[in-house]
Image 1 (tube, helix red, strand yellow):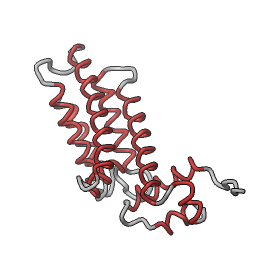
Image 2 (tube, helix red, strand yellow):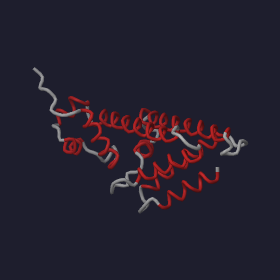
Image 3 (cartoon, one colour):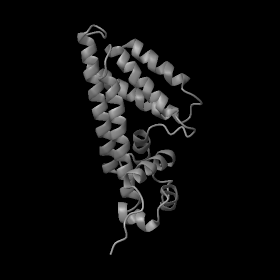
Image 4 (tube, helix red, strand yellow):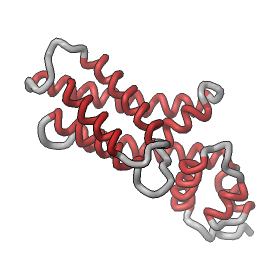
Length: 192
């Protein structure tokens, strides 16, 4: 008869997400996961299949959370320009929560895996595509409302903003605080 699980798999995935976010996939050992999740090695492999499968679940959880947090701010009430600023400031603030300067797990994973792992690349691309589409929709709404110049290509601007956010993710890993990134956000939004 199988022994019942003595841990919450959802909480374990959440904790694993934190470990991978802080250290990256390659620098995280199965033993570190076992210690952090406070489960046995057998439980790690029985419940999740192994380090890679747990990483995939943790990355998926992060991507879902990040998408929901950003789109909620982009689709909220108020002028389009201020919703964009709010969403970008939210991202900056999230980079500096805690002492780890973790940046963004999606960007970190894209940098760590590159195109060497198509499964990870596809998951990260999907997040970036969905955020870019939400930004494009917001820009088009703002153009109709007269908040952004109507002559600019909203799709190109959304791609530029995605690139700006990705660069901010990298800067967040080395910056001592959010001031520079807040200036980037404000200048970028004001230039639109």
